[in-house]
Image (cartoon, rainbow, N blue to C red):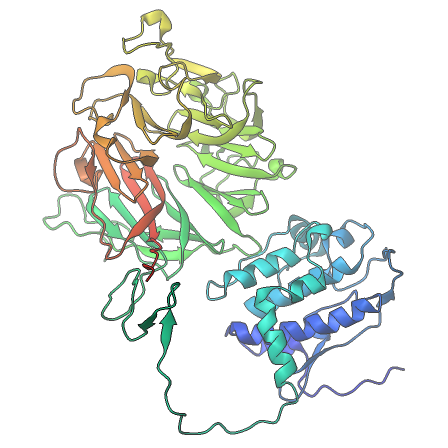
Length: 622
Protein backbone atom coordinates (compact mmCIF):
# COMPACT_ATOMS: atom_id res chain seq x y z
CA UNK A 1 0.00 0.00 0.00
CA UNK A 2 1.24 3.50 -0.86
CA UNK A 3 0.28 6.32 1.51
CA UNK A 4 0.31 9.83 0.03
CA UNK A 5 -0.57 13.24 1.37
CA UNK A 6 -4.16 14.40 0.93
CA UNK A 7 -4.91 16.84 -1.90
CA UNK A 8 -8.06 18.70 -0.78
CA UNK A 9 -8.33 20.72 -4.00
CA UNK A 10 -9.10 17.66 -6.12
CA UNK A 11 -7.57 17.01 -9.52
CA UNK A 12 -6.69 19.38 -12.32
CA UNK A 13 -9.29 17.61 -14.47
CA UNK A 14 -12.03 18.50 -11.97
CA UNK A 15 -10.75 22.08 -11.80
CA UNK A 16 -10.93 22.38 -15.60
CA UNK A 17 -14.40 20.82 -15.72
CA UNK A 18 -15.75 23.34 -13.21
CA UNK A 19 -14.57 26.24 -15.39
CA UNK A 20 -17.63 25.67 -17.65
CA UNK A 21 -15.90 26.96 -20.80
CA UNK A 22 -14.58 30.07 -19.01
CA UNK A 23 -10.99 30.20 -20.30
CA UNK A 24 -8.09 30.65 -17.89
CA UNK A 25 -5.82 33.65 -18.26
CA UNK A 26 -2.35 32.90 -19.56
CA UNK A 27 -0.59 33.70 -16.27
CA UNK A 28 -2.70 31.10 -14.44
CA UNK A 29 -2.01 28.51 -17.14
CA UNK A 30 1.73 29.09 -16.90
CA UNK A 31 1.59 29.07 -13.08
CA UNK A 32 0.22 25.51 -13.18
CA UNK A 33 2.36 24.45 -16.11
CA UNK A 34 5.76 25.36 -14.67
CA UNK A 35 4.97 23.43 -11.49
CA UNK A 36 4.16 20.32 -13.54
CA UNK A 37 7.28 21.03 -15.60
CA UNK A 38 9.52 21.12 -12.52
CA UNK A 39 7.96 17.97 -11.09
CA UNK A 40 8.39 16.04 -14.32
CA UNK A 41 11.96 17.34 -14.66
CA UNK A 42 12.76 15.95 -11.21
CA UNK A 43 11.23 12.59 -12.15
CA UNK A 44 13.20 12.40 -15.39
CA UNK A 45 16.49 13.24 -13.65
CA UNK A 46 15.91 10.04 -11.66
CA UNK A 47 15.58 8.15 -14.99
CA UNK A 48 11.89 7.50 -14.36
CA UNK A 49 9.13 7.63 -16.97
CA UNK A 50 5.72 8.57 -15.59
CA UNK A 51 3.87 7.01 -18.58
CA UNK A 52 0.41 8.17 -17.44
CA UNK A 53 0.66 11.94 -17.12
CA UNK A 54 -2.83 13.44 -17.42
CA UNK A 55 -4.98 16.06 -15.71
CA UNK A 56 -6.66 13.34 -13.58
CA UNK A 57 -3.25 12.54 -12.06
CA UNK A 58 -2.33 16.15 -11.24
CA UNK A 59 -3.48 17.12 -7.75
CA UNK A 60 -4.26 20.54 -6.22
CA UNK A 61 -3.95 21.97 -2.72
CA UNK A 62 -6.96 23.48 -0.95
CA UNK A 63 -6.31 26.93 -2.44
CA UNK A 64 -5.98 25.37 -5.90
CA UNK A 65 -2.65 27.11 -6.46
CA UNK A 66 -0.10 24.34 -5.79
CA UNK A 67 -0.04 21.24 -8.00
CA UNK A 68 1.63 17.87 -7.53
CA UNK A 69 1.95 14.87 -9.83
CA UNK A 70 0.47 11.61 -8.55
CA UNK A 71 -0.20 8.02 -9.65
CA UNK A 72 3.21 6.52 -10.37
CA UNK A 73 1.68 3.03 -10.48
CA UNK A 74 2.82 2.29 -14.03
CA UNK A 75 6.01 4.34 -14.02
CA UNK A 76 9.21 2.73 -15.25
CA UNK A 77 12.86 3.23 -14.35
CA UNK A 78 15.11 3.46 -17.41
CA UNK A 79 18.84 3.18 -17.82
CA UNK A 80 20.54 6.19 -19.38
CA UNK A 81 19.97 5.04 -22.98
CA UNK A 82 17.21 2.44 -22.76
CA UNK A 83 13.68 2.74 -24.06
CA UNK A 84 10.37 1.29 -22.89
CA UNK A 85 8.18 -0.94 -25.05
CA UNK A 86 5.00 -1.70 -23.06
CA UNK A 87 1.87 0.07 -24.27
CA UNK A 88 0.46 1.78 -21.19
CA UNK A 89 -1.26 5.06 -20.35
CA UNK A 90 -4.59 6.74 -20.93
CA UNK A 91 -5.50 6.65 -24.66
CA UNK A 92 -6.19 10.40 -25.04
CA UNK A 93 -2.65 11.21 -23.85
CA UNK A 94 -0.57 8.46 -25.45
CA UNK A 95 2.08 9.49 -27.95
CA UNK A 96 2.24 8.56 -31.66
CA UNK A 97 5.19 6.25 -31.04
CA UNK A 98 3.06 4.33 -28.52
CA UNK A 99 0.25 4.09 -31.07
CA UNK A 100 2.69 2.53 -33.55
CA UNK A 101 4.12 0.13 -30.97
CA UNK A 102 7.57 1.67 -31.27
CA UNK A 103 10.02 2.00 -28.35
CA UNK A 104 9.75 5.26 -26.46
CA UNK A 105 11.56 7.34 -23.84
CA UNK A 106 11.10 10.59 -21.90
CA UNK A 107 9.80 12.31 -25.05
CA UNK A 108 6.59 10.32 -24.63
CA UNK A 109 6.00 12.09 -21.30
CA UNK A 110 6.66 15.41 -23.03
CA UNK A 111 3.89 14.61 -25.52
CA UNK A 112 1.54 14.02 -22.57
CA UNK A 113 2.75 17.28 -21.00
CA UNK A 114 1.82 19.05 -24.23
CA UNK A 115 -1.65 17.49 -24.03
CA UNK A 116 -2.01 18.79 -20.46
CA UNK A 117 -0.91 22.31 -21.45
CA UNK A 118 -3.36 22.25 -24.37
CA UNK A 119 -6.14 21.18 -22.00
CA UNK A 120 -5.33 24.08 -19.66
CA UNK A 121 -5.53 26.52 -22.58
CA UNK A 122 -8.66 25.16 -24.27
CA UNK A 123 -10.48 23.38 -21.39
CA UNK A 124 -10.81 20.31 -23.60
CA UNK A 125 -8.58 17.44 -24.62
CA UNK A 126 -6.34 17.77 -27.63
CA UNK A 127 -7.34 14.37 -28.97
CA UNK A 128 -10.81 12.88 -28.52
CA UNK A 129 -12.87 10.47 -30.60
CA UNK A 130 -15.88 8.16 -30.33
CA UNK A 131 -13.75 5.00 -30.47
CA UNK A 132 -10.14 3.90 -30.11
CA UNK A 133 -9.34 3.45 -33.85
CA UNK A 134 -10.62 6.96 -34.59
CA UNK A 135 -8.61 8.32 -31.65
CA UNK A 136 -5.43 6.63 -32.86
CA UNK A 137 -6.01 8.11 -36.34
CA UNK A 138 -6.28 11.59 -34.85
CA UNK A 139 -3.14 11.15 -32.78
CA UNK A 140 -1.19 9.76 -35.73
CA UNK A 141 -2.22 12.70 -37.92
CA UNK A 142 -1.35 15.16 -35.12
CA UNK A 143 -4.37 17.35 -35.83
CA UNK A 144 -6.07 19.35 -33.09
CA UNK A 145 -8.07 22.57 -32.85
CA UNK A 146 -6.05 25.78 -32.33
CA UNK A 147 -6.19 27.52 -28.97
CA UNK A 148 -7.94 30.85 -28.55
CA UNK A 149 -6.49 33.98 -30.14
CA UNK A 150 -6.41 35.57 -26.69
CA UNK A 151 -3.24 33.61 -25.90
CA UNK A 152 0.24 34.62 -27.04
CA UNK A 153 1.97 33.13 -30.10
CA UNK A 154 4.69 31.86 -27.72
CA UNK A 155 2.17 29.69 -25.86
CA UNK A 156 0.78 28.39 -29.14
CA UNK A 157 4.26 27.54 -30.39
CA UNK A 158 5.16 25.81 -27.12
CA UNK A 159 2.16 23.50 -27.48
CA UNK A 160 2.98 22.75 -31.11
CA UNK A 161 6.59 21.91 -30.28
CA UNK A 162 5.61 19.42 -27.55
CA UNK A 163 2.98 17.80 -29.79
CA UNK A 164 5.40 17.22 -32.66
CA UNK A 165 4.84 13.82 -34.27
CA UNK A 166 8.61 13.25 -34.39
CA UNK A 167 9.87 12.52 -30.83
CA UNK A 168 13.36 13.77 -31.70
CA UNK A 169 11.93 17.21 -32.53
CA UNK A 170 10.11 17.62 -29.22
CA UNK A 171 12.05 19.84 -26.82
CA UNK A 172 13.81 18.52 -23.73
CA UNK A 173 12.39 19.64 -20.38
CA UNK A 174 15.38 21.88 -19.71
CA UNK A 175 14.87 23.48 -23.13
CA UNK A 176 11.25 24.21 -22.24
CA UNK A 177 12.32 25.72 -18.93
CA UNK A 178 14.74 28.01 -20.78
CA UNK A 179 12.07 29.44 -23.07
CA UNK A 180 11.18 33.09 -22.50
CA UNK A 181 7.53 32.32 -21.84
CA UNK A 182 8.47 30.07 -18.88
CA UNK A 183 11.23 32.11 -17.22
CA UNK A 184 9.02 34.67 -15.45
CA UNK A 185 6.51 32.13 -14.04
CA UNK A 186 9.42 29.97 -12.88
CA UNK A 187 10.98 32.94 -11.05
CA UNK A 188 7.60 33.86 -9.58
CA UNK A 189 7.19 30.30 -8.38
CA UNK A 190 10.46 30.37 -6.45
CA UNK A 191 9.75 33.79 -4.93
CA UNK A 192 6.02 33.49 -4.22
CA UNK A 193 5.38 29.93 -3.03
CA UNK A 194 5.53 29.94 0.77
CA UNK A 195 5.91 33.71 0.99
CA UNK A 196 4.07 35.63 3.72
CA UNK A 197 1.17 37.63 2.33
CA UNK A 198 1.30 41.34 3.18
CA UNK A 199 -1.26 44.06 2.67
CA UNK A 200 -0.18 46.60 0.12
CA UNK A 201 -0.10 50.27 1.22
CA UNK A 202 -3.33 52.05 0.29
CA UNK A 203 -1.54 55.25 -0.73
CA UNK A 204 1.05 54.97 -3.48
CA UNK A 205 4.54 56.23 -2.99
CA UNK A 206 5.57 59.57 -4.48
CA UNK A 207 5.15 59.32 -8.25
CA UNK A 208 8.24 58.97 -10.35
CA UNK A 209 7.96 60.52 -13.82
CA UNK A 210 8.15 57.88 -16.51
CA UNK A 211 10.68 58.47 -19.23
CA UNK A 212 11.63 56.71 -22.40
CA UNK A 213 15.29 56.54 -23.30
CA UNK A 214 16.16 56.97 -26.92
CA UNK A 215 19.08 55.22 -28.59
CA UNK A 216 21.24 58.30 -28.17
CA UNK A 217 20.52 58.61 -24.46
CA UNK A 218 18.03 61.50 -24.64
CA UNK A 219 14.67 61.47 -22.88
CA UNK A 220 11.15 61.74 -24.19
CA UNK A 221 8.31 62.09 -21.70
CA UNK A 222 5.75 59.28 -21.94
CA UNK A 223 3.02 61.92 -21.71
CA UNK A 224 3.80 62.84 -25.33
CA UNK A 225 3.53 59.61 -27.31
CA UNK A 226 5.52 59.23 -30.50
CA UNK A 227 5.34 56.88 -33.42
CA UNK A 228 1.61 56.16 -33.24
CA UNK A 229 1.09 53.32 -35.69
CA UNK A 230 -2.58 53.78 -36.38
CA UNK A 231 -6.00 54.30 -34.92
CA UNK A 232 -6.81 57.62 -33.36
CA UNK A 233 -3.86 59.50 -31.94
CA UNK A 234 -6.21 61.37 -29.64
CA UNK A 235 -7.93 58.34 -28.16
CA UNK A 236 -5.00 55.93 -28.44
CA UNK A 237 -7.30 53.24 -29.90
CA UNK A 238 -5.10 50.67 -31.66
CA UNK A 239 -6.04 49.55 -35.18
CA UNK A 240 -7.63 46.10 -35.64
CA UNK A 241 -5.29 43.19 -36.26
CA UNK A 242 -6.89 42.72 -39.69
CA UNK A 243 -9.57 44.23 -41.89
CA UNK A 244 -11.38 42.27 -44.60
CA UNK A 245 -13.01 44.04 -47.55
CA UNK A 246 -15.24 42.80 -50.35
CA UNK A 247 -16.74 44.34 -53.47
CA UNK A 248 -18.60 43.19 -56.57
CA UNK A 249 -22.04 41.58 -57.07
CA UNK A 250 -23.66 44.98 -56.64
CA UNK A 251 -21.31 46.26 -53.91
CA UNK A 252 -19.70 49.19 -55.72
CA UNK A 253 -17.13 50.28 -53.12
CA UNK A 254 -15.08 48.23 -50.62
CA UNK A 255 -17.30 46.94 -47.81
CA UNK A 256 -15.58 46.06 -44.53
CA UNK A 257 -16.73 42.63 -43.34
CA UNK A 258 -17.51 41.99 -39.66
CA UNK A 259 -15.11 39.87 -37.64
CA UNK A 260 -13.53 39.46 -34.23
CA UNK A 261 -10.25 41.25 -33.59
CA UNK A 262 -8.05 38.50 -34.99
CA UNK A 263 -5.40 38.46 -37.69
CA UNK A 264 -6.44 36.91 -41.00
CA UNK A 265 -3.42 35.79 -43.01
CA UNK A 266 -5.10 34.44 -46.16
CA UNK A 267 -8.46 34.70 -47.92
CA UNK A 268 -10.22 32.90 -50.76
CA UNK A 269 -13.47 33.46 -52.65
CA UNK A 270 -15.75 31.10 -54.56
CA UNK A 271 -19.01 31.58 -56.41
CA UNK A 272 -20.89 31.97 -53.12
CA UNK A 273 -18.22 31.46 -50.44
CA UNK A 274 -15.95 33.94 -48.71
CA UNK A 275 -13.37 32.31 -46.45
CA UNK A 276 -10.24 33.20 -44.53
CA UNK A 277 -7.58 31.61 -42.34
CA UNK A 278 -6.60 33.25 -39.05
CA UNK A 279 -3.06 33.38 -37.72
CA UNK A 280 -4.04 30.81 -35.08
CA UNK A 281 -5.21 28.36 -37.73
CA UNK A 282 -8.99 28.74 -37.65
CA UNK A 283 -11.21 28.87 -40.73
CA UNK A 284 -13.57 31.85 -40.80
CA UNK A 285 -16.48 32.22 -43.24
CA UNK A 286 -18.56 35.26 -44.18
CA UNK A 287 -22.16 34.71 -45.18
CA UNK A 288 -24.93 37.02 -46.36
CA UNK A 289 -28.61 36.47 -45.44
CA UNK A 290 -30.83 35.04 -48.22
CA UNK A 291 -32.00 37.44 -50.93
CA UNK A 292 -34.93 39.52 -49.74
CA UNK A 293 -34.32 38.76 -46.04
CA UNK A 294 -33.49 41.51 -43.57
CA UNK A 295 -29.89 42.50 -44.17
CA UNK A 296 -29.70 40.38 -47.32
CA UNK A 297 -29.31 41.48 -50.93
CA UNK A 298 -32.20 43.42 -52.39
CA UNK A 299 -34.60 41.67 -54.73
CA UNK A 300 -34.17 42.39 -58.45
CA UNK A 301 -36.11 45.49 -59.45
CA UNK A 302 -36.13 46.96 -55.95
CA UNK A 303 -36.05 50.76 -55.95
CA UNK A 304 -33.58 50.95 -53.08
CA UNK A 305 -30.52 48.74 -53.32
CA UNK A 306 -29.02 48.08 -49.88
CA UNK A 307 -25.60 46.60 -49.19
CA UNK A 308 -25.87 43.09 -47.69
CA UNK A 309 -25.03 42.70 -44.01
CA UNK A 310 -22.55 39.85 -43.89
CA UNK A 311 -22.16 37.65 -40.81
CA UNK A 312 -18.86 36.02 -39.84
CA UNK A 313 -18.59 32.60 -38.24
CA UNK A 314 -15.86 30.13 -37.49
CA UNK A 315 -16.28 26.79 -39.19
CA UNK A 316 -17.89 24.18 -36.95
CA UNK A 317 -16.44 20.72 -36.63
CA UNK A 318 -12.84 21.94 -36.85
CA UNK A 319 -11.81 20.01 -33.74
CA UNK A 320 -8.29 18.66 -34.00
CA UNK A 321 -7.36 20.74 -37.04
CA UNK A 322 -5.10 23.74 -37.57
CA UNK A 323 -5.74 25.30 -40.99
CA UNK A 324 -2.95 27.12 -42.82
CA UNK A 325 -4.50 27.59 -46.29
CA UNK A 326 -7.98 27.62 -47.86
CA UNK A 327 -9.17 27.64 -51.47
CA UNK A 328 -12.75 27.96 -52.71
CA UNK A 329 -14.32 26.59 -55.89
CA UNK A 330 -17.89 26.78 -57.10
CA UNK A 331 -19.94 25.57 -54.09
CA UNK A 332 -17.05 23.61 -52.54
CA UNK A 333 -13.99 24.40 -50.42
CA UNK A 334 -10.59 22.78 -49.81
CA UNK A 335 -8.46 23.32 -46.69
CA UNK A 336 -4.82 22.49 -46.00
CA UNK A 337 -3.76 21.76 -42.42
CA UNK A 338 -0.40 22.45 -40.83
CA UNK A 339 0.26 18.70 -40.97
CA UNK A 340 0.01 18.64 -44.77
CA UNK A 341 -3.46 17.08 -44.86
CA UNK A 342 -6.12 18.27 -47.34
CA UNK A 343 -9.77 18.36 -46.31
CA UNK A 344 -12.72 19.25 -48.54
CA UNK A 345 -16.42 19.97 -48.08
CA UNK A 346 -19.39 21.28 -50.04
CA UNK A 347 -20.80 20.09 -53.36
CA UNK A 348 -19.46 16.75 -54.59
CA UNK A 349 -20.48 17.28 -58.22
CA UNK A 350 -17.75 16.49 -60.76
CA UNK A 351 -15.85 14.66 -57.99
CA UNK A 352 -14.36 17.95 -56.77
CA UNK A 353 -14.09 16.77 -53.16
CA UNK A 354 -11.70 13.94 -54.05
CA UNK A 355 -13.43 11.38 -51.81
CA UNK A 356 -13.92 8.79 -54.55
CA UNK A 357 -17.59 9.64 -55.05
CA UNK A 358 -19.90 12.50 -56.01
CA UNK A 359 -21.54 12.94 -52.60
CA UNK A 360 -21.99 16.34 -50.94
CA UNK A 361 -20.24 16.79 -47.56
CA UNK A 362 -21.29 19.45 -45.04
CA UNK A 363 -18.23 19.27 -42.77
CA UNK A 364 -14.53 19.13 -43.73
CA UNK A 365 -13.49 15.59 -44.57
CA UNK A 366 -9.95 14.32 -45.14
CA UNK A 367 -8.98 13.43 -48.71
CA UNK A 368 -7.80 9.97 -47.69
CA UNK A 369 -6.04 9.20 -50.97
CA UNK A 370 -3.42 11.86 -50.09
CA UNK A 371 -2.73 10.76 -46.50
CA UNK A 372 0.61 9.27 -47.51
CA UNK A 373 1.85 12.66 -48.75
CA UNK A 374 2.66 15.94 -47.06
CA UNK A 375 0.79 18.51 -49.12
CA UNK A 376 2.00 22.12 -49.14
CA UNK A 377 -0.56 23.92 -51.35
CA UNK A 378 -4.01 23.41 -52.84
CA UNK A 379 -5.94 25.42 -55.45
CA UNK A 380 -9.55 25.15 -56.57
CA UNK A 381 -10.98 26.03 -59.95
CA UNK A 382 -14.69 26.25 -60.68
CA UNK A 383 -14.97 22.45 -60.82
CA UNK A 384 -11.49 20.97 -60.40
CA UNK A 385 -8.64 20.92 -57.87
CA UNK A 386 -4.85 20.83 -58.03
CA UNK A 387 -2.47 20.19 -55.13
CA UNK A 388 1.30 20.00 -54.71
CA UNK A 389 3.32 18.05 -52.13
CA UNK A 390 6.57 18.83 -50.37
CA UNK A 391 8.26 16.43 -52.81
CA UNK A 392 7.02 18.63 -55.73
CA UNK A 393 4.45 16.02 -56.80
CA UNK A 394 1.28 17.40 -58.42
CA UNK A 395 -2.17 15.84 -58.01
CA UNK A 396 -5.41 16.73 -59.77
CA UNK A 397 -9.06 15.73 -59.56
CA UNK A 398 -12.52 16.91 -60.60
CA UNK A 399 -13.83 17.88 -64.02
CA UNK A 400 -11.47 17.11 -66.90
CA UNK A 401 -12.92 19.04 -69.86
CA UNK A 402 -10.37 20.89 -72.04
CA UNK A 403 -7.58 18.84 -70.41
CA UNK A 404 -7.56 21.11 -67.36
CA UNK A 405 -6.32 18.26 -65.09
CA UNK A 406 -3.14 17.80 -67.14
CA UNK A 407 -3.62 14.02 -67.26
CA UNK A 408 -3.62 13.72 -71.05
CA UNK A 409 -7.38 13.02 -71.22
CA UNK A 410 -10.68 14.87 -70.87
CA UNK A 411 -12.02 12.47 -68.24
CA UNK A 412 -13.46 13.43 -64.86
CA UNK A 413 -11.81 11.97 -61.73
CA UNK A 414 -13.38 11.84 -58.26
CA UNK A 415 -10.13 11.02 -56.45
CA UNK A 416 -6.61 12.53 -56.70
CA UNK A 417 -4.51 11.48 -59.70
CA UNK A 418 -0.78 12.14 -59.90
CA UNK A 419 0.09 14.49 -62.75
CA UNK A 420 3.21 14.19 -64.87
CA UNK A 421 5.09 17.45 -65.39
CA UNK A 422 8.07 17.87 -67.73
CA UNK A 423 11.01 16.14 -65.99
CA UNK A 424 13.24 19.22 -66.01
CA UNK A 425 10.68 21.19 -63.94
CA UNK A 426 9.72 21.06 -60.26
CA UNK A 427 6.34 22.37 -59.14
CA UNK A 428 6.25 25.09 -56.51
CA UNK A 429 2.69 26.44 -56.72
CA UNK A 430 -0.51 25.51 -58.56
CA UNK A 431 -3.23 27.83 -59.92
CA UNK A 432 -6.68 26.86 -61.18
CA UNK A 433 -9.00 28.78 -63.49
CA UNK A 434 -12.45 28.09 -64.88
CA UNK A 435 -11.25 25.59 -67.49
CA UNK A 436 -7.46 25.60 -67.21
CA UNK A 437 -4.55 25.22 -64.82
CA UNK A 438 -1.05 26.58 -64.22
CA UNK A 439 2.01 25.41 -62.33
CA UNK A 440 4.68 27.87 -61.20
CA UNK A 441 7.98 26.03 -61.03
CA UNK A 442 10.88 26.36 -58.62
CA UNK A 443 12.74 28.21 -61.39
CA UNK A 444 9.86 30.71 -61.74
CA UNK A 445 8.57 29.38 -65.04
CA UNK A 446 4.95 28.82 -66.11
CA UNK A 447 3.56 25.41 -67.07
CA UNK A 448 -0.07 25.33 -68.21
CA UNK A 449 -2.81 23.05 -69.53
CA UNK A 450 -6.49 23.26 -70.45
CA UNK A 451 -8.22 25.85 -72.61
CA UNK A 452 -5.84 28.38 -74.17
CA UNK A 453 -8.66 30.49 -75.62
CA UNK A 454 -7.27 33.88 -76.75
CA UNK A 455 -3.84 32.61 -75.61
CA UNK A 456 -4.84 33.14 -71.97
CA UNK A 457 -2.22 30.56 -70.89
CA UNK A 458 0.60 31.95 -73.02
CA UNK A 459 1.00 28.66 -74.92
CA UNK A 460 1.11 30.23 -78.41
CA UNK A 461 4.57 30.25 -79.98
CA UNK A 462 5.22 34.01 -80.01
CA UNK A 463 8.78 35.30 -80.34
CA UNK A 464 8.03 38.98 -80.96
CA UNK A 465 5.22 41.52 -80.62
CA UNK A 466 3.55 40.19 -83.77
CA UNK A 467 0.38 38.09 -83.78
CA UNK A 468 1.13 34.35 -84.13
CA UNK A 469 0.28 32.48 -87.31
CA UNK A 470 -2.51 29.85 -87.08
CA UNK A 471 0.03 27.00 -86.94
CA UNK A 472 1.72 28.65 -83.94
CA UNK A 473 -1.53 28.94 -82.00
CA UNK A 474 -2.51 26.39 -79.33
CA UNK A 475 -6.21 26.19 -78.49
CA UNK A 476 -6.06 23.41 -75.91
CA UNK A 477 -3.48 21.34 -74.03
CA UNK A 478 -4.25 18.13 -72.15
CA UNK A 479 -0.82 17.92 -70.51
CA UNK A 480 1.28 20.60 -68.85
CA UNK A 481 3.34 22.59 -71.35
CA UNK A 482 5.81 25.43 -70.91
CA UNK A 483 4.57 28.93 -71.73
CA UNK A 484 5.94 29.80 -75.16
CA UNK A 485 4.90 33.43 -75.58
CA UNK A 486 7.44 36.21 -75.14
CA UNK A 487 8.15 37.52 -72.49
CA UNK A 488 6.46 34.82 -70.35
CA UNK A 489 9.05 32.28 -71.45
CA UNK A 490 11.95 34.63 -70.67
CA UNK A 491 11.09 36.55 -67.49
CA UNK A 492 11.10 34.92 -64.01
CA UNK A 493 7.44 34.78 -62.94
CA UNK A 494 6.73 35.04 -59.19
CA UNK A 495 2.92 35.32 -59.25
CA UNK A 496 0.14 34.52 -61.72
CA UNK A 497 -3.62 34.12 -61.82
CA UNK A 498 -6.21 32.92 -64.32
CA UNK A 499 -9.55 34.59 -65.02
CA UNK A 500 -12.39 33.38 -67.22
CA UNK A 501 -10.76 34.38 -70.52
CA UNK A 502 -7.57 36.21 -69.52
CA UNK A 503 -4.60 35.84 -67.18
CA UNK A 504 -1.98 38.02 -65.52
CA UNK A 505 1.58 37.41 -64.34
CA UNK A 506 4.05 39.33 -62.18
CA UNK A 507 7.79 39.21 -62.83
CA UNK A 508 10.55 39.22 -60.23
CA UNK A 509 11.20 42.89 -61.05
CA UNK A 510 7.61 43.83 -60.18
CA UNK A 511 6.21 44.27 -63.69
CA UNK A 512 2.72 43.02 -64.59
CA UNK A 513 1.89 41.32 -67.90
CA UNK A 514 -1.64 40.45 -69.05
CA UNK A 515 -2.70 38.09 -71.85
CA UNK A 516 -5.90 36.60 -73.25
CA UNK A 517 -9.23 38.24 -74.04
CA UNK A 518 -9.48 42.02 -73.84
CA UNK A 519 -13.20 42.30 -74.55
CA UNK A 520 -13.82 44.45 -71.45
CA UNK A 521 -10.42 46.14 -71.19
CA UNK A 522 -9.20 43.59 -68.61
CA UNK A 523 -5.68 43.62 -70.09
CA UNK A 524 -5.18 47.25 -69.01
CA UNK A 525 -4.10 48.50 -72.44
CA UNK A 526 -6.57 51.44 -72.47
CA UNK A 527 -8.48 49.79 -75.31
CA UNK A 528 -10.67 46.77 -75.92
CA UNK A 529 -8.69 45.50 -78.92
CA UNK A 530 -8.01 41.78 -78.72
CA UNK A 531 -4.51 40.44 -79.19
CA UNK A 532 -2.89 37.07 -78.48
CA UNK A 533 0.38 38.82 -77.55
CA UNK A 534 1.10 39.37 -73.80
CA UNK A 535 1.06 43.06 -72.87
CA UNK A 536 2.95 45.00 -70.22
CA UNK A 537 0.48 47.00 -68.10
CA UNK A 538 2.03 50.42 -68.60
CA UNK A 539 -0.28 52.10 -66.10
CA UNK A 540 1.38 50.18 -63.25
CA UNK A 541 4.99 51.14 -63.96
CA UNK A 542 4.97 53.73 -61.17
CA UNK A 543 4.70 50.96 -58.56
CA UNK A 544 6.26 47.59 -57.91
CA UNK A 545 3.56 44.96 -58.31
CA UNK A 546 3.77 42.02 -55.90
CA UNK A 547 0.45 40.19 -56.37
CA UNK A 548 -2.16 40.04 -59.11
CA UNK A 549 -5.64 38.47 -59.19
CA UNK A 550 -8.08 37.94 -62.05
CA UNK A 551 -11.88 37.89 -61.96
CA UNK A 552 -14.24 37.02 -64.79
CA UNK A 553 -13.47 40.16 -66.83
CA UNK A 554 -11.40 42.37 -64.54
CA UNK A 555 -7.97 42.44 -62.90
CA UNK A 556 -6.64 43.58 -59.51
CA UNK A 557 -2.97 44.39 -58.81
CA UNK A 558 -1.35 44.94 -55.40
CA UNK A 559 1.72 47.13 -54.95
CA UNK A 560 4.58 46.67 -52.52
CA UNK A 561 3.39 49.71 -50.54
CA UNK A 562 -0.20 48.49 -50.24
CA UNK A 563 -1.59 50.10 -53.41
CA UNK A 564 -4.73 48.43 -54.79
CA UNK A 565 -5.48 49.06 -58.49
CA UNK A 566 -8.27 47.62 -60.65
CA UNK A 567 -9.24 47.67 -64.32
CA UNK A 568 -11.54 45.86 -66.73
CA UNK A 569 -15.31 45.38 -66.67
CA UNK A 570 -16.88 47.81 -64.20
CA UNK A 571 -20.47 46.49 -64.03
CA UNK A 572 -21.97 45.59 -60.62
CA UNK A 573 -19.05 46.99 -58.66
CA UNK A 574 -16.35 44.69 -60.01
CA UNK A 575 -13.70 47.42 -59.79
CA UNK A 576 -14.53 48.63 -56.27
CA UNK A 577 -14.87 52.23 -57.43
CA UNK A 578 -17.69 54.31 -58.86
CA UNK A 579 -15.92 55.87 -61.85
CA UNK A 580 -16.56 54.17 -65.17
CA UNK A 581 -12.97 54.37 -66.45
CA UNK A 582 -12.13 50.72 -67.00
CA UNK A 583 -9.33 50.35 -69.57
CA UNK A 584 -6.45 51.53 -67.38
CA UNK A 585 -5.49 50.78 -63.75
CA UNK A 586 -7.06 53.11 -61.19
CA UNK A 587 -6.65 53.01 -57.37
CA UNK A 588 -9.26 51.63 -54.98
CA UNK A 589 -9.76 53.55 -51.73
CA UNK A 590 -10.09 51.57 -48.49
CA UNK A 591 -11.59 52.94 -45.28
CA UNK A 592 -8.32 52.70 -43.37
CA UNK A 593 -7.15 55.50 -41.07
CA UNK A 594 -3.67 54.05 -40.61
CA UNK A 595 -0.91 52.73 -42.88
CA UNK A 596 -1.67 49.19 -44.02
CA UNK A 597 -0.29 46.26 -45.96
CA UNK A 598 -2.31 43.88 -48.12
CA UNK A 599 -1.83 40.34 -46.82
CA UNK A 600 -4.05 38.41 -49.23
CA UNK A 601 -6.41 38.90 -52.18
CA UNK A 602 -8.79 36.62 -54.06
CA UNK A 603 -11.07 37.19 -57.06
CA UNK A 604 -13.79 34.85 -58.31
CA UNK A 605 -16.35 35.57 -61.01
CA UNK A 606 -17.40 39.20 -60.27
CA UNK A 607 -16.25 39.34 -56.62
CA UNK A 608 -13.10 40.41 -54.79
CA UNK A 609 -12.02 39.60 -51.22
CA UNK A 610 -9.10 41.53 -49.71
CA UNK A 611 -7.29 41.25 -46.35
CA UNK A 612 -5.15 44.06 -44.91
CA UNK A 613 -3.25 44.54 -41.66
CA UNK A 614 -1.61 47.58 -40.03
CA UNK A 615 1.84 48.40 -41.36
CA UNK A 616 4.51 48.47 -38.67
CA UNK A 617 6.01 51.94 -38.58
CA UNK A 618 9.39 52.47 -37.01
CA UNK A 619 9.48 55.26 -34.47
CA UNK A 620 11.95 57.97 -35.46
CA UNK A 621 15.16 57.85 -33.43
CA UNK A 622 16.29 60.83 -31.44
